[in-house]
Amino acid sequence: MESALDQLDRFTDEPTKQMLRGLIKRKRKYENYKKQSFRWQAAALICAASFCLFVAWKGYGKNSILGELLNDSMYMLWILSAAFAYSTAYFFKKKEEKAEADFHKLRCEIIQKSTDLWPQPEEWKSRETVYKVMKQQYDINLYFESK
Image 1: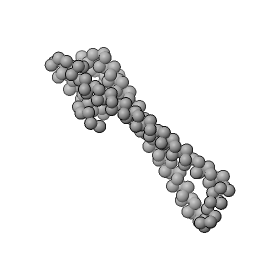
Image 2: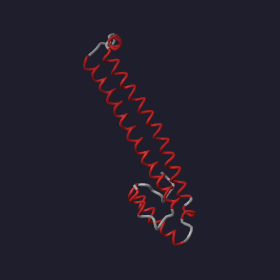
Image 3: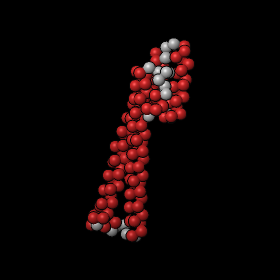
Image 4: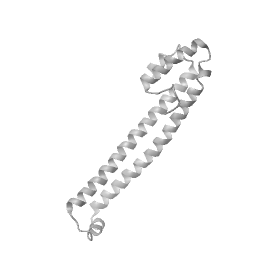
């Protein structure tokens, strides 16, 4: 993280680099929550699908399904694990949405303040270099505010 930002010493001042570091940190936090959310969604789907397949494979009649589900602790464990995976996926999805909003808010703030961060015409030309590094190294688009 630091190596690409250290290249920008002559193009940015220290407060700007701090803002960019914060932006990179928020992007990584967002990506981490996105991965966690996807993993738990996949786990919930696998648990629910395998439970349904197992019940279908056993071939219970319509009247005996509820009795079997309540009598066998293995089925209850399966149902609880699917519910836990779903609730954890929901938790991480909410965290992901919040992290994405924070990331997008800071990104838009940097874009809007670009005239203050690079006020001189010579510095304004160096802004392009900073934007390219952020796009290539960290996949952060500072050209437009849209997502």
